Image (cartoon, rainbow, N blue to C red):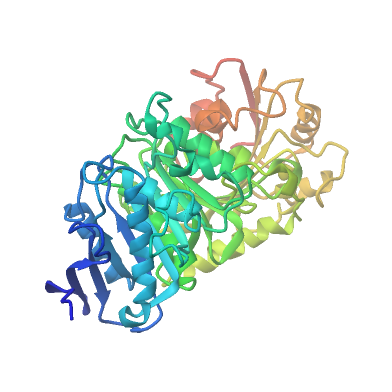
Length: 540
């Protein structure tokens, strides 16, 4: 009987124990280097557990499972309750492509064949790889059942090597050099499998990666998404080390949520299902993310990556902004640059509409004005729940509501809600019209300062905003006009453009008490704001 286990180690943290077994041969027919290490939790259920296969990088010609990054990752995920395999494969100097693709398939096959003994659910195996390992991970996601690159008659061809999900960090999806002989084999690369794939995939990419060009990665992601595949994409500032030893504050939570969603399904330690990093996390001191929370799937929450850090530096809990979209639609994707930027300055933003990885205009629907109140109800519940990540991090005594166009009417429809401390009506106004349950009568319910922001006479809402401004007799009101921006404003520009800066200044003034903005809003000092006008009334 062959002895497969050469070394057993133990680790213990917070009363959680795991065992690590090194150098298991998952394949014995091609040489000595097809080995893997296995980390198994000794806590929790010992059967039908989710599993992760880690695949190292190194340009297919270097690298090892013994790299400390991969060993640490293996232990970390075992501590989270996964059975984790960390593998080596044949490098190109030992066997040319597609040998390494065959090896990762064999590793999955070994895990499935030994699932009962290892306590693995064979239907809940996910993968992670970085760089060349990211390529191999994605190949398991897009071509696990393809036999086009297999060796004829290989004894392991008769069993599916499909996985439940796949994660690729800086993954080469194609060989961009047309002169490379590797580029002649589309079946070796994810680019050769553009179709609706059943396997969910997460791609993590550095925006300044000099080795794996971001434009090629984005091209592949876009094509896969348009084909109907479930591909999440997280792009952050950084080079080739993103998702390996850089920007882990972004990439590791994205991986945690992705695995929890597709392998655990009910992991209570992860509050959100899906994550995105719009506009590289904003321009503020607290880089921000957009998430779809499990308990609020029809909204997007934008918040600093570490709310605790922001609270400590701000010396107080974070104010809240509720956001309603133009057209009263159920997506904030056209505003995510602005909303991410606002969050990066120490705010939590709850925006109507499910998180979208890319624009899906054919799926957009109108939303009721009650969604504004629903967002406030949810954040107040979270603030009161000690088990919530928002507990002690958000200040529900400082809630603002903003809306663009029809979304502005949705805000005015909720003007009487006592929880609102200020309103922002963006390229909107009621005038003499009725829309989204609001009309000029809604102005009578105002009880807090209000900002109207319009885009000059070409803005279809400009006249209605002027009428509203004149009609408000007692409530403090400011009318800011970005005279050349039009109805669409600047919200989708990097960091949301000038409109976003004006919105943030208002929030800082109203919710954070920053008196330096008195000059802007009370005295009309528009230094740094070209082509703007501003006026105010009813302030004491």
